[in-house]
Length: 445
Image (tube, rainbow, N blue to C red):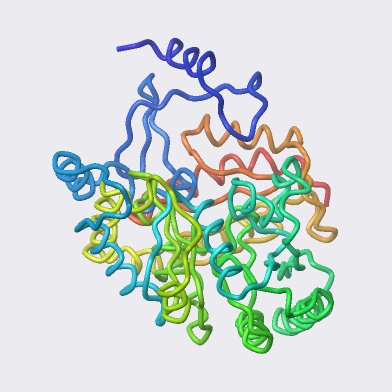
């Protein structure tokens, strides 16, 4: 076995990692994973409190998916996407069954970013219009157009990016000044009117689609009321635009329903971008699922897009097996039920720790926002700035105590695999409790 230090050094010497200055990279060498745990090369165990990048929904090394991958690999790993394969057809069929009504056909991609990229391309081809409207506090991927579409500050290095993205204000009731003195529903109504005004200023004849996350993800799990989505759909219908929903992170049971948009059952979706939980990260795969109307358009119009690895047979087989796990083990319902346990635990922590300014989320998709003062809501680490020392210490302490999770700006994510038990949830909450006790010293209220 290669020593851990040598593994780290080879990774640093011969590979490049993302979203970091390479000289500051100090990775943990991971050797294996099982269930909700990952293990480093020194044998230390970490609870995977964020499902890695909120994608390993069914947990690590699930035998049903591992077996399906092995069997498919022995038969056919890859064929040109102009050919038909059994796993491709079956996965398309399963997606038509579990996605919202009216979505009927899937175009398979390599992951979430190119699913969003292709969804925007399809919308522009279908409508003959250029502009896509997206939210500021959103993240849609890291290829050129999808990076431009996201309002997340990671877009800044890419700017000016593509010229046809128009950004919209966020339904962020905790911080957006629109909501001051208003209920969430009243704030959402005002915000929706602002969005319609933006459409009018851009010219409806130029606007192809509104692109929204089904349930907000890495920008902070902020979620509007039904008023917002209902009005967004009405605006699309009024001006001949499509509604694209990005379910890359919030899909496949993460929020206690199959998809985040399912929390708004009366809202019709025209296109949906998928990835992450579609295979739980076992094999890279994404998809754009489209309505009957959009699909029929491309019966007689060329889809000017393609990927060498589109509809990859091995990935599709992994996707079929993963959806079977969701169904056979009732993981969507499990996420809903255990999400209530998680939320109660996080709310109990908020009662105990003044640094918790807000708790947001549903299902096994939650975040706590940490503040210096609850009255002023000053964040423990500012948006779009490097970590402050307290947040650096918090992120390190979580890892040191065996909890691996996403920490961004002033937010700590709680998005564990859907197979987690109530006992394991409580163990994770205890680690959070311990780390937040040290952080409380920085509270200035």
